[in-house]
Length: 202
Length: 202
DNA sequence: AAAGTTTGGTAACCGACGGTAACCAAAGTG
DNA sequence: CACTTTGGTTACCGTCGGTTACCAAACTTT
Image (cartoon, rainbow over all chains, first blue to last red; front, side, top):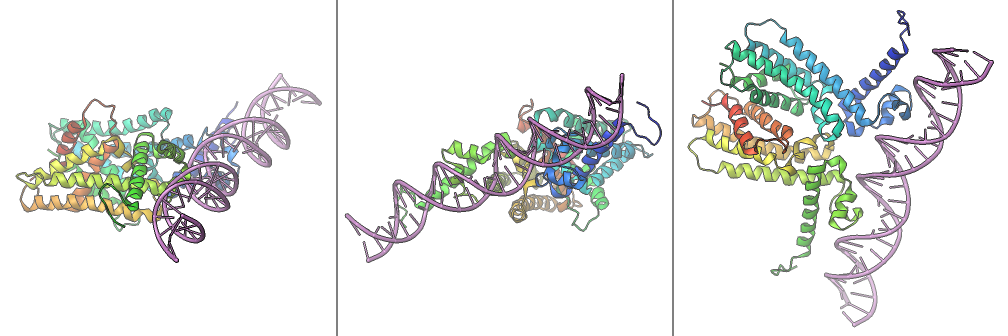
């Protein structure tokens, strides 16, 4: 199987189609809600029949999981990028990463990440969901530990507990936020993150 | 229509049956998940047919809403009771109320309150959901204001924002908590509330 | 007490939707 | 040029939320 430039391999074509399905589903789930989007609607928008989708996903739930993974990867990437921003203290990097996290979570096609997923988890899906979540958690715990080490955060904080509390506060924004409000995501992020971090600053 | 003791009126009987349906549904939704509980299952457990339920609820969604209201009322009642606990400062009352809130939220039949509800809201349902949520919010904002007034909380905190941040942190526990863990709800509550409040103490 | 009327239930059914089976056309392969 | 593989279609099934027609018991009226 050669990979001549401009002539995608069969595998690439197949993968591209699968991603198209996930992208389309992601958009519809985000705006209309998982429950309200029949597979027929997704198939119709892609110009195929429902049964064709089953060449690429094993179930509607599996499709949701793939959407979830894409969204989580985007979230993780945005946080990692924010972590690389040069700044004086670890606390400052944490602040930037958290604000980025909040802004990303308020995207229309990200809202279902925390909303729709949980009740629909099949036992087998829980592992992959947990993996993404643990990744996020470990990123923030690492930043918290850095903050303890460089003295910009309280020495007596428990990174595990603090990560739970802070992520709770910011995730809650993603659940409560609706684009109709007057405040811009960036303003909300700054205010919430500032309050959520205050108790941990040295 | 007389109300002779021991002889419940028709209205009382009807109401009692409706509450039985809600109680049964609440339990099943909480343990098995809304999506996984067919109305037939609820009806069977009550010894009737599915169609009989429609004498008391207008739809499965309506049934979920009634479960939600019962749960929220219980939550509100537990917080109000905690607020009445005599204590030296408003901050202390707030701490007690928050811990009670967390413990109540970790009840098995309360977990679906934040998990299953949101994606399933019909436009008409949103108002009643919002009412309960606003009630909770106003209780905590009042306590925060009391704390500012009696000097036990920082004078420069914004009650609206602080209530959002703190409730986010504690609600997140309800989402993340699973009874399988080793820690008792009361311990978790104490730790989380302590961290979440730290930034607001005077 | 007999004749309506209301109440609360059942059985049977409908439509939507997730998922599957049988089949088929076109592209790839020896 | 047979032959397999791939990716799609049509037609169908089972489940489940919701509705309709009907019925029995209780309550009301005269």
